[in-house]
Image (cartoon, rainbow, N blue to C red; front, top):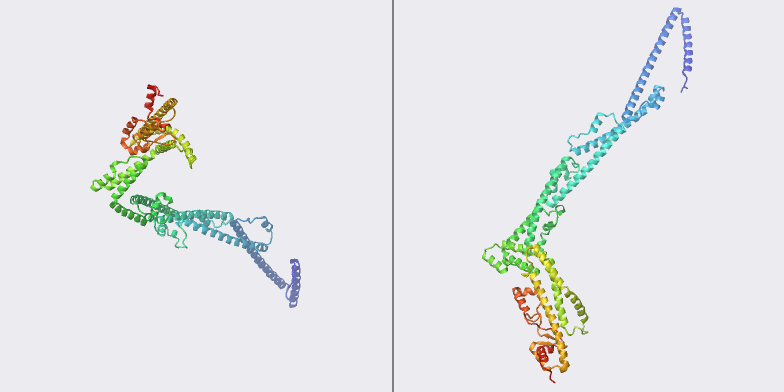
Length: 603
C-alpha cells in the first residue's frame, strides 16, 4: 500500500516526470529529424490535449462538488423540516455553525446519522399520533353513536401532518384523556340505568334482555365484540324506558295495594286461618312499603296480581253465603267494645233486629255489616276521646274499693291480733286511709273534667247509659248523708255513754241479762264478743238498710233506671247504728232516759 503523499510532493514528482518525458520526446524528434516548426506544432497539440484533460477533470470535480453541496443542502433542509415538525432545535444551532466551514463530504458524513435519527423519531411520533388518533376516533364514535364524529383535533392532524411536536402530542393526549373520562362516566351512567331497568323488570316480572335490546342491542351484552353504546340516544332511550317501568310499577302497586286491602278486610271478616294468609304474604307485604322500597322480584308481576284478584273473588263469594254469621259476629264485637268502654251500643243493629232484618230480606246484609263497622269505628273513636276520664273513673272505683275494704277491716274485732298477715293488713289499712281522704278531690276533679269534655264535644258523657255527672253528684250527696249519719251516731253514742254512766252510778254496773237477750233477738244483730254488734246480713247488699249505700258506676250498671228512686228512698230510710260499744243498752235507750228523767230512783 502506497504511503500518503502531500499535494506539493505529488506535483513536484509529476513535474519531474513530465520534464523527463519531454526531453525524451524531443530527443526522439531530433533523431527522427523533425523540423522545429513540426516540433512546435506537436508541442502545442500536446499542451492543448493536457489542457483539455485538466478542463475535463475540473468540470468533473465541479459537478461532484455541486452534487455534494446539493445533497448536503437537501439533507440539511430535511433535517430542518424534521426538527421543525418534531419541535427540536433549529438547524442554525451553535453546533451547526462550527461545522459551516468544514468540507462537503465531512458535512455529509456528519448530517446523515442525524437525518436517519430524525426520520426514525418522526416515524415513532407518527405512530404515537396515529394510535391516539384511532383511540380518539373510536371513543368519539362511541359517544356520538358513530354518526360522523366531528373532532377538530383529528381534522387538524390530517391537515397539519407536519406538526408532530411534543406540544401537539400533549394536546392530543389531553384530549384523549378527557374523552376516556367522559367514556368512563357515560359507561358508569349506562350501567346505573341498566341496573335500574334490571331491578324494575325483576319486580314487574318482565323480560330484561328484550327490554334493553329494544333500547340498543349492545346493552344486552350478548355479543362481547360489540362495545356498549354510550351515545346520547342510548341515554334518552334508557331514561324513557325507566320512566315507563316506574309508571307501570306505580299503577301495579296501587292496584295490588287495593287488592291487599280487600284481602285483609275479608280475612278479618271471615276469620281466615294464618296458613291461608301466608300464601299471599308477598302480596300484602307491599302495604307497609313505599315505591322505592319494593325490590322483591316478581312481587308486582301480572301473575301475582291475578292470583290475589282471584282470591278476593273467592272470598267475596264465600262472604255472601256467610254474611249473616259475619253480621252477628261484628255486632258481638261491637257489644264487647261498648261493654269494655261503658258506652251504650246502638240498638238499631241489635242481634234481634239484625236477625229479623236479614231474614225478612228488607236490608242487604252488606249494608248492615257496613253500618255495624261504622258503629265500631265511632265507638273506638269515642273511647279514645273518653280515655282520660275513664282512667280517672277506674282510679275512683279503686279508691272506693279500698274504702269498702277499710270499713270491713275496722269492723273486724280480730284486726289487732298478732295473727298471720296482720301486719300486711295494717299497712294496707294505712294506705287505704290515705286513699280515702283523696276521694272527694278525685270526684271533684272528675266532675270538672267531665264538664269540660261535654262542653268540648257538645254532648253528655254517658256511663252505661247514665250521665256520669249525675252519678258523681248522687255519689257526693250519698257520701255527705253517710258522713252526717256517722256524725249523728257518734253524738248519740256520747249521750248514751253519759246516761249509762249516770245509771251505773245510781243502780250499779251489773247489766240486765233479759234486756241484752231481748235486744239481740229483736234487732237481728249478732255480738262480736267485744261488746259491739254488727248486722247479721251484709250491710252493702241491703238496699233498705239504715245507712245509705255509696253507689258507684258499677252499681249503676245493675240498677239501671231505678237508681234515682232508690236514692230518694235511701235518703228517708231509718238509721242503723253500726259499731257502737255497749250495744246491749241501745234498744232500751229511750225507756231508760224517760225513767231516769221522769221518776225518782228506786232503792
